[in-house]
Amino acid sequence: MMRMPLPVLLVALLFIVPSATAGEKPTVIDIWPGKAPDEPGTIGPEKVLMSLKNTPKQVEITEPTRLISNVTRPTLTIYRPAKDKDTGTAMLICPGGGYWNLFWEIEGEEVAVWLNKLGITGIIVKYRVPRRPDEIKGEPARRPLQDAQRAVSLVRSKAKELGIDPTKIGMIGFSAGGHLAIATATSFEKRAYDAIDDIDKVSSRPDFAILAYSGYLKAKDKDELAPGLRIPEKTPPIFLVHGGEDIISSPLHSVVMYQALKKAGIPAELHVYANTAHDFAVRPSDRPYGAWMRSCEQWMRNQGVLTAPIRP
Image 1 (cartoon, rainbow, N blue to C red):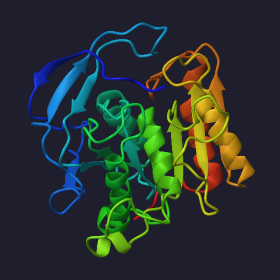
Image 2: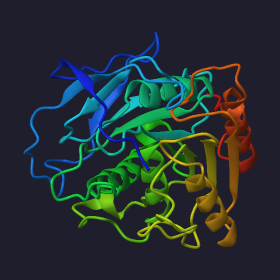
Image 3: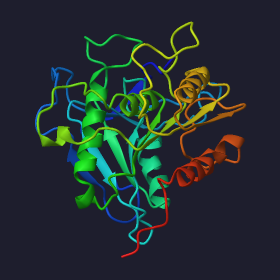
Image 4: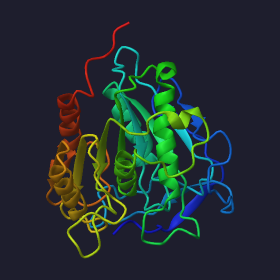
């Protein structure tokens, strides 16, 4: 079960991306050269929202945080690390929000800051939300996968321009964004849209993926992968983390995915933290789950996708 739309307070109609660090401001580029495919453009202007205060039983970060909704123009917001820390690794960040909103602050900007500290270029994917009327409630929306596949190909096509290694491009997703990350990591054999230019000839397969408290991975009432998910032979290495007491997205989603990955012979690592709910993101904590970022960093180094900074 995934987050449904939260009660929200409208605070702005236009979204202006703030800098995640005190240094260089992020670069924003369009994912599509024109109108996104299969886009009706009927949901109104993009807007910024604030989530309401929640309870510790439901989520770990309970105070209001900033969201984005009504996205019809998908973009990439690129945060570069300091030059002396830059490793050449890049990660596309997929915020969660149940495919209704994007938790832009805690699962986007704050994640980019964490990645920059590791010397990783953080690239937030602003994919299309909310679900359009023709997308089934309670199931993954189809348009975000189009945006994510195109985003990976676009970043890889611009690797030299961005100063990144085209063989070290990963994805990290939270909640519904975790589903989007694994859907992208396992659907590289066929695009969810008709190719439009040379960028679509570039591989859309990420080189690794990190899934945090994901949903939509497990079939309803069955301990097997959800319909629409499969694990092809060349699926990249996967890291999964979940809260053991998550009532929004059961940890069984990550457990079932881990089992499927291992059965397919794909390198995978799973961490489930006791007494932990949904939405812990990357904020420091003295709770046991606060160690997950360090474990993830070690995993990336062990996989060879995060190495020492590139020296001029």
